[in-house]
Image 1: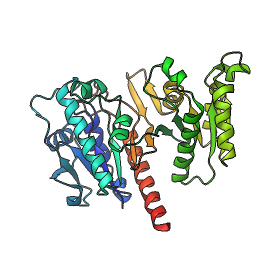
Image 2: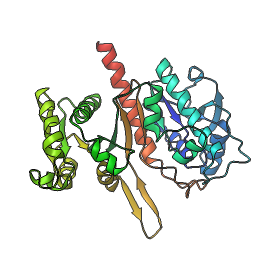
Image 3: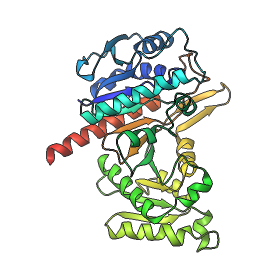
Image 4: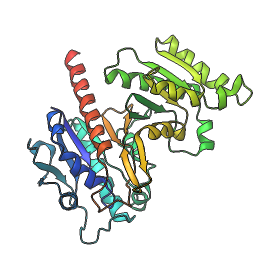
Length: 346
């Protein structure tokens, strides 16, 4: 079975708690061998907070992992002073403790000692306070794997969304809608769908402007940039369609018309997916469900993640949902098996 590393995320957030709760779900051990990269003291504390009946074992490397579904194996970085850690508080110490397991897991994946990396949420302010100047996980993975052509894919149920741009201002995002970039993202989406077992992916490409710009009335990006990208993809035997007005495209994709959607910027893709996967309970003032997976495309290694933040308001309570993390681990394991089978076929 594939070895899947789980980075604990910001220790002041819900990452350690959802990690423990996910690893208490026994069916996971039928699809992978999970390992946590983080601080063993933080994970042990999370076991107590959540009330999960699991032991915690400190190991130095993935090779020391034992397949025991009653024990959490932790590659221990020993980088948190548990007595000074404060749940729900942004700090450089927590940022450092969140960043270091990510770097170590990436290096382990590049070395081939693990098959995939699943990340729990980090706080961008905390990692920047610690001196690591990255916009988020995606950029960290791109940096350490020396990847230039990459994209974020969000998945919930049968909706898969890949972004032309993510962590930039909306003003800059419009400037990044360029033919070459859109073609690359279409290819990344196509390859990702293939890695998930979809033989002939159908790709829907969103317009940037309202109503697809109405033949140039509301902007020129569709005519000058997006249509040429779609035509190029078609000439390369990819079943791509667009640009399509975003307000109807996502509804069609949810209904099964497309296997992946190309979104032009962050919120255009995130809002419909989170509307599908996130359910707020006003009566109880909490989330009933927080579902969705983030997959980084274009990397030489497999990386999936939860599609939510550190939820500092829930940290230390043991009440956070681990749904998204379980799904992220399942996707990582599935992609790792597909990669192994592809290498064997070659």
